[in-house]
Image (cartoon, rainbow, N blue to C red; front, side, top):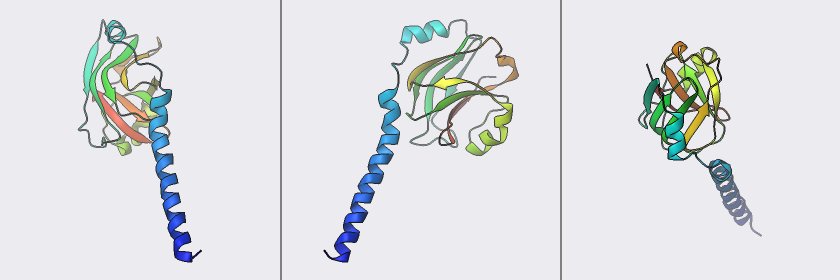
Amino acid sequence: MKLGKIIALLFSHGLVGFAGFALGIYLLPILIAPPAPTVTEVIQASSNSIYTTEFRKDLQDSDGLHWGEGTVSLNNTSITLMGSLAPGPDYKLYLSPQFVETEADFNRLKSSMLQVGEVKTFEKFVVSLSDEVDLEKYNSVIVWCETFGEFITAGQYR
């Protein structure tokens, strides 16, 4: 077999392998995600909302693979999203004392933030809050991908 053909085969097989790996990273969270809460469950959990905000796709570090949109409601027992997020692995929900929309700002302020839970669904979510969470200490809610250190979205609620 000629050297050129071997190189072409290695390149093409490597490219297909890489594409399959990347596609797997993207699709696996979708395949293993639990069922999203129903509209009724989100409405019930968001009753008595103290604050609301919006996740928007047009934030500085949001892009075609890292975004969120919809209405976020906060009360003393839960944070809910009536909307959707770009699928991805290892999403965490944070409360921040400052609004951020970049990875650099998130990393700079992470020590002052409070991680309140995991986001495992991409169409609507309900994240329960512990009794110790004081919403008044913060003004923004952020979705962050821990595994890849990616900013997903944020909303300022006060």
